[in-house]
Picture 1 (cartoon, helix red, strand yellow):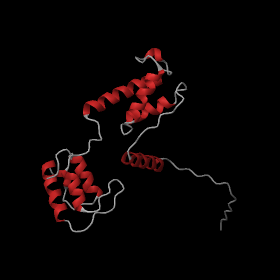
Picture 2: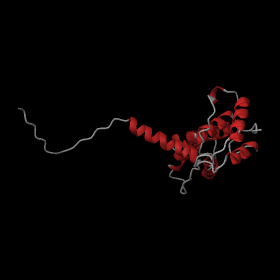
Picture 3: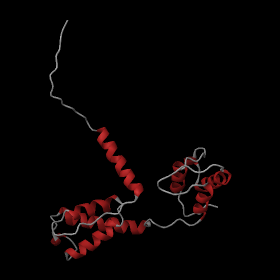
Picture 4: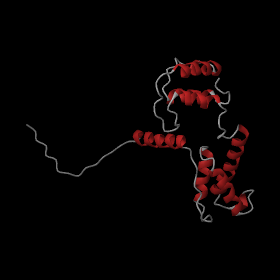
Length: 182
């Protein structure tokens, strides 16, 4: 049986990523989705298509992965809320002229350490924004590198491409053009 630690969103992601032929998976409950996915993977004969996110080649490998507990790479709800609150405090510091007087922080080193902590959670947009603004602080010499998962990097690149494609494109050329009216 597929482990309960995998969310419905995780299972839908695997279905989309490996193009599993399960009819209307979004309308199914998590329990029904687990059952259908397990049956499909057990009866699957061919190899799975290549994926850059996971290195499963056979259905047995994927099924064995799904039957174990999900590796806990994400923060839980409370921890994520704490990271967002900390990020907002650092953004407040940055937007008020990088002045310690308007914040609860007592020294720059404390802010730097909190920034390093936030950089480890670069998948959260507020944390990315806080570290990016903190890197603009002239008092911080060593810039902080944000750690972003490949999945989120791919989403950010796609958003950037979409944004560039939606903008108005105007091209101006300076050349001689001859018009003739007959």
